[in-house]
Image 1: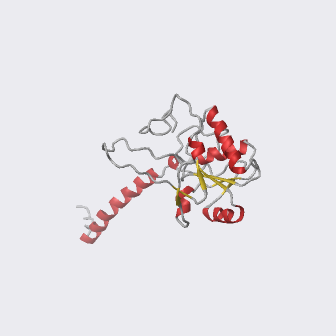
Image 2 (image 1 turned 135 degrees about the vertical axis):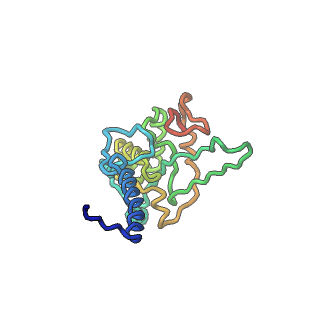
Image 3 (image 1 turned 90 degrees about the vertical axis):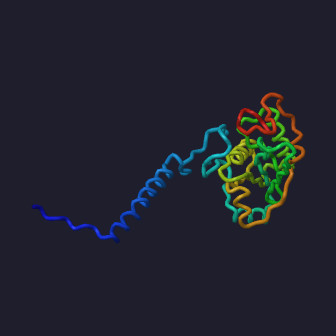
Length: 221
């Protein structure tokens, strides 16, 4: 007869049962963090980004300076820059019951001008002209005026607007990728309305968004 192997005691069995779920969980977590989901290594496109505005962005913007919240606070104190928020308008939820109250509140960095839609990668000619004219008015036509673009984290819209401004010849363009979320962690915000002049710009009749339509579905706000 062969030698009988020792049987594990109860404590050893409990440790084994406890460790197996942990090992499975570790495998699941590693799979969730696959390279395809990593924000590292996103490259700048040659032109404006044409895809969905929410997604991982590059860490750089050629021709502009990238800021964190601390550097932005210093810039605001020293230079009083033109602050441009390109965040989209919150549309009324499609499932809201009839008569339901819809009172969206938009908060910004104090002193900001809210230009929703100005970060679209496919602005029509009228939109491009209106944006160019509005920025000229806000800067007094001074292409050395400091300008900061932002929206929310992982937002291509502020990247696109920064790239547009560089292409228009502005030499002091700053991009704040942390957006309003990163700012409000340590600073005050204010309730803001959409810039009235930008809101009244001519819009294309075809492809405009109805109130319940999601953005980036071939329509405009």
